[in-house]
Length: 297
Figure (cartoon, rainbow, N blue to C red):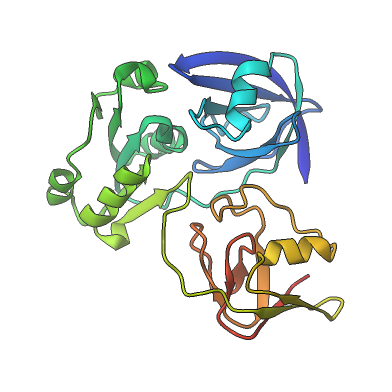
């Protein structure tokens, strides 16, 4: 399901970073919680995912931030060069793979554009009376979006370079949850430094990982009984697309969760970054450990 918005405001918030404010074209937009993201459909036929970094209490507007990537695949470059205020844009309903779990205290760690999902989390945690602290770093001061907006907070440390996550972990209270978003080097360091049960991370790009060699398997669409062979050389999502199964797709990298389908029988092989449950499959990248998967399609 999609929503129609008008691009109300385009604002530079750091070097090569634009904040976009999207207003509902036909009234209020779908509600969301901190950590959520949307798919933005661009006029050049590309679709990209962006974290919501505005105020969940504002029913009429979404805010996102888009960094211009040096090796853009056409999405961020289009936003920076061609999008103008007043343009009508289609967005998805919000999805949240990075929810804020209730806790008495939080440590938020952000790097660069990774501040976007953290911003509403920080506000929500503060409003709930939880103890909060933020460590926010970047390559240079002018590359860090919303740094001025955050500078007045007494619980915030903003700096250039790498944060000493090992030192932060050494002082971490067992009741504190850690939320981290940023470049892969930061996320990998966080996973090494903090206890698994206290750490929540969100990736904008998939990790480089090794998996067993692809093996063929079968998808069965439970509602029609259609059986679809998946060869070792093709993604399951492509097979579903050819069959007209109507599975939406976003990043096609196993990060956004757009293509989630429910597994009724069989064992998925999760190759995604969403943290899929045993009864979920993200067919853009994930495959099967069993000979067949029966899907709720």
